[in-house]
Amino acid sequence: MPYVIGASCVDIMDRSCTEECPVDCIYEGQRKLYINPMECIDCGACEVACPEQAITVDHKADPAFREDNKRFFTDILPGRDSALGNPGGATPLGPVGVDTPMVSTL
Ligand code: SF4
Ligand code: SF4
Image 1 (cartoon, rainbow, N blue to C red):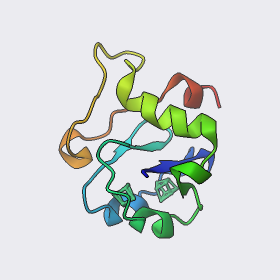
Image 2: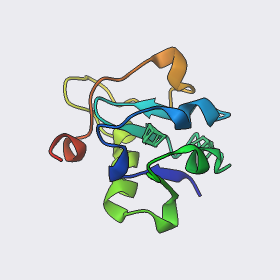
Image 3: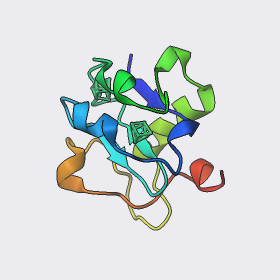
């Protein structure tokens, strides 16, 4: 089961989690980070690295954030012309620079 980043990450974004992820599947929006559920290998390394306790395994996560993390990759984000999909690595892609509509309104 993939891991999910919740509300505690918003406007924190210290990126401790990204340094621990062995598959580089934690992507950067504008105010929050998002885990790609198709690329996450469910290792749990990011959960213990997060100083805000923002990361939880998906069945324990807030359902709104569980769905929103998926939508970051499957929906066309504001200002973009296609969905991110599964880029295969957050570092080469760089910051996406935009959030989902739900996170933008928090
Ligand atoms: S470690 Fe936690 S608070 Fe920091 S960027 Fe990652 S999810 Fe957000
Ligand atoms: S659970 Fe592991 S693979 Fe998934 S996002 Fe966290 S560190 Fe990366």
